[in-house]
Length: 342
Image (cartoon, rainbow, N blue to C red; front, side, top):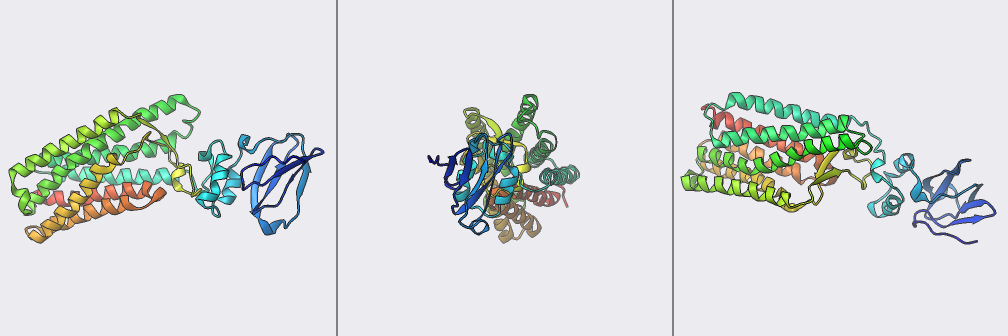
């Protein structure tokens, strides 16, 4: 009989006299055949069937790539497959994003709702903490507000926009709500370097006592923000992003959000500069000894952002935003001293 060959995990399929049979391979495939000729598949360890051949009468064989109900079989596989092993499987699935991660859909958006609540608390506290407003204190408040919007839109999108794949109107609404996420964040993050410079000056860091240096930091921050948005304006923009690769149990699968069509390392440079600035200026302020309390909170802010954004893969989606919230909390505590006259 002729044996059409499907991806290597599925093995050769033999059709003979209206019978379908699958030879045993490294992982045996059992075919669940119904009277309507819908073919289902799941993998089982080699020892489950031994060398036997499974057969059943069928009316028609559909290519695996045309299957639609794949969540249950993939759910059985997700804990045992490596990235390399899963590639043939993902090629056979029309929409890998539909794979069920086995977790409650409300967990991921609830985490972002909690981040939003924490940041609202921080900006509320900033209102009372800032007695002497400056450009740096404004930047601190602006970035906190930008992070509130960022986390809020991801949370709302994951709660109320689950059906954007089939609802073009909802897709466009969430997309337009997402544009400010990237713009506010990209503009605000460089400006918060001005906040760091003002806090460093207050805490006695030598080179930050110069007005020329302070002005230079302001100019550089504005230039970096403008350059970032010019680069974005020339890009293809944003699109819905879905975690469509192993691990299949990634919590990020339950998030409905947008991301850059063409992610670029240049987009994260301002965030790296800000985190390192907090850490290094905080260390310099600690050595200066003028105000150790401000120095410690700046170091806390820098480490929170660096560690949160350094964690790998699908974890980074959650740890990165948690690290940003931690940074804003550290700067809030420093702001109580620097801008509050405490």
